[in-house]
Length: 317
Image 1 (cartoon, rainbow, N blue to C red):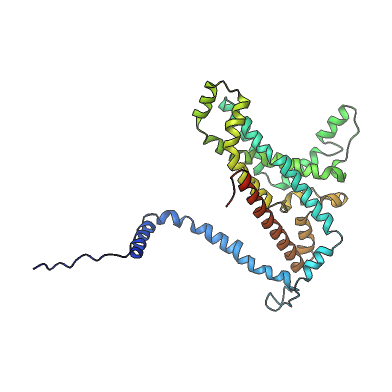
Image 2 (tube, one colour):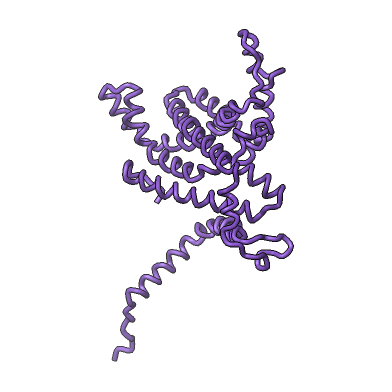
């Protein structure tokens, strides 16, 4: 007599659950490494979102969120009717567009040029020199910029004087401020951003270049036909991210270089938020500005992501 019971047949759902359990047990160390990242985003990104409710309140620091009176869209109306808002928004958009037009292609160009260098010691030396400014704070970089452009002892004005031109008070001329912000930003970050593109270039199959050599292609043809297409996915992803942050210029850089004489051309949303929010205590009003920036960024990134997907096939999602 057979005393053994027949094997139990598992359902498809049970089989899937068992296989998933084995997978988690096998790779638990990898997923454990993700936990600190999740905790960071929950604590510092998602939980603070709940504080956005104060944009619709007359928030009082002492009564707190739950006891502050609800005022609807009052602060948004104040923002859009503020006489200087359009000027501040224009400054923000113009500087951001200048950074996009001049600053975004710079690391791409530098990465392509470095990729063509065959002397490794020279390539590494240039790389190191170029990305060192990234590790300097804007306090230091701002001080360097101000000193370099100083009308009394700045090297730029010394050169102008040497060639017979008049010395220029660069930091007191509103028409120069945006250019100073853009080019100082490029100098500081171009080397660091180049690393991303060099990493993408390292993944290109060398056989493609060898085949191009056999076909008699020159360096320029190889750059156009091999290098740039290989970089396109990385370029499009970073471009879309940059477009989504078009109203986020970075407070530190502009604040360090800003002075009362150039405020008309240099005041941006971030410095405006600091002056009236942290210094003026208008927390509800500045939260409304933050929501406005987020909505604009979301619309831009969704719109350009769709356009990029149709035109190039590359997108964030």
